[in-house]
Length: 115
Image (tube, rainbow, N blue to C red; front, side):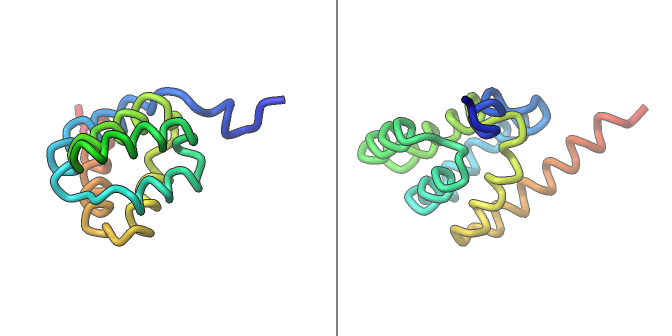
């Protein structure tokens, strides 16, 4: 029987997807991957096969690995993957990045309700 984590996986919700998409250059510049990869695996945002693929891309260069990781987050991390991703950033010492994503996310949410 499928677990709750397995059932909830899939594409990130549209608002969060857009926040990550707009911030890809910033995230590739700021993030160093292994701590984030390990935290995302521990929180069931990515699976073991995805960890292996990200590790392979990291060997080509940090930005390539981060792009691969973000792709997995956006496309298969789950509809509600943003909160655990932000927790992963904080846990890995990237509070400034987590704070920026939270601000951008709040701005996106506010913009949806402006007349």
